[in-house]
Length: 463
Image (tube, rainbow, N blue to C red; front, side, top):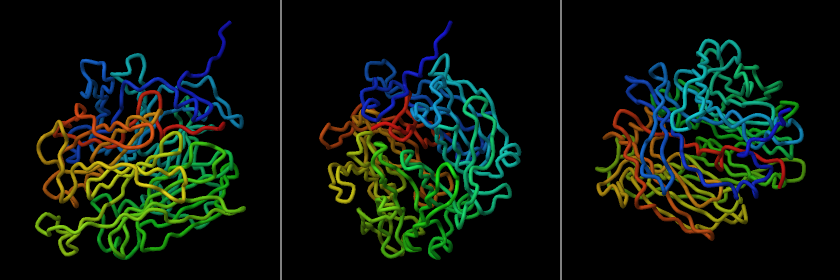
C-alpha cells in the first residue's frame, strides 16, 4: 500500500530550507512588449557545472499574444506543511503564470522534463472574471488553503481590486477571498504572517492608470497606491489600514520575516513626490495593532538633462525608483532594486529598524548605463525583479518593469538581460563575471522563480 510522502522541496522551517540543494534552473516570465508574438516562459540553466550555464535552455510559448506575463508562482510550497491546513501530499509541480494585461491564467507542468514545461491548462479571461469577480491577475502565492491570486481590478476593470483563491490541484477558481474588505479599493501584492493570522496587502492602481504607462497627472496628484492593509486571515476581514501619505507613491512589494515568530516585514515606496527619493519601511506589530516606520531613504541623483527621458528632464535628476525588494531566508539581508539609478543594494537588517548598507553593485541605469564584466558595452534598464537562492548565496535579477512603463524611463528602448550576483556569508555582493544572459530582442524578462523554491515563494509555520 503506498505511503504519502511530502514533496522533498517542502521544508517546515526557513532554517531547514537554507540547507536545501542548490537550484539548477531558473524560470523567467518573458513578454513581448510589442504584443506581436506570444509571451514565453523561459528556462535558464543556473548550474555552474553545466555546459549550458547562463543560457536559455527552454522556452514555452503561450497560446495567445498580448498577455504581458508578470508575477507567477508555484501551485504548492512549504506552507502545505502548516498544521492549520496540511496538504503534505501535494507536489511543487505546476507554475501558475498570469497575464497581467490579458487576465488569462496559464498552468504549466514542469514534469517530466523541468527544462521543457508544458501547458496543462489555460483559464480564459471570461472565466476568471465570471468565477473570481476580478481581472488583471498580478501576484501568485501558494498558501495552506490553496493558491492566492491578487488582482488589480474587478470584472469591469475598475475598483475594487482584491484577491481570489484557486484550487491547488484542479486549478478551478473558488471565488473572491474577501468577506469584508472595509475601505480597501486598490490592490497589488499580498502576503501573510501565518502565526499571527494576519494577511497584508499593498497598492498600485487601476488598469487605466498603468496599462499605457504611468499617468503623470495621477502620479503628481498622489492618486496611486500609498497604503498597507491588514486583514484577519481566516475571517477574511479587513481590520486596519496604514496610510504612508500621498507623498509616498506606489507602495509595492511585501516581504514578511520568514521566521513565523517574528511579526514584522518590509515594503518599498517607489517614489516620493517631495524629492524623487525612494524609501523602505518596516511594518511591525505594536501591542494588538500594526504600525510602520520608514527605515531607509534613497535620494535621487543629479544628472545631465540630455541623458534623461522627457518626463525627467525638468527635474535634472534620476530617481532611484525602488521597484522590488527581497529578503534572505535567514531574515538578515534585504536586497533593494534601484531600477532608475542602476543600483542593487544589500542591507543588513538583522535589526529591522536599523539597517546597514552591506554591499552594492551598479548595472544599467537611466543616466549611468553601467556595464557588466561579460557584456562590455553600456547597458540600459536596471535591477528590477530580484530573487534569492534559499541558502542566500546567489542573487538573480532582470531589468524590465512593465512594457509601457519601460519606454517612459528608458525612452531609447530597453534590451533585456539577466544577471547573477554572488553573496558572502557575512555580507558583500559581486557580479558572477560569467553569468550574463543577453535576452532575445523580441522579448523582455521579468520575474524569476527558482527550481525547488526561493526566498519569495514559500512561507513557513515553524521557526
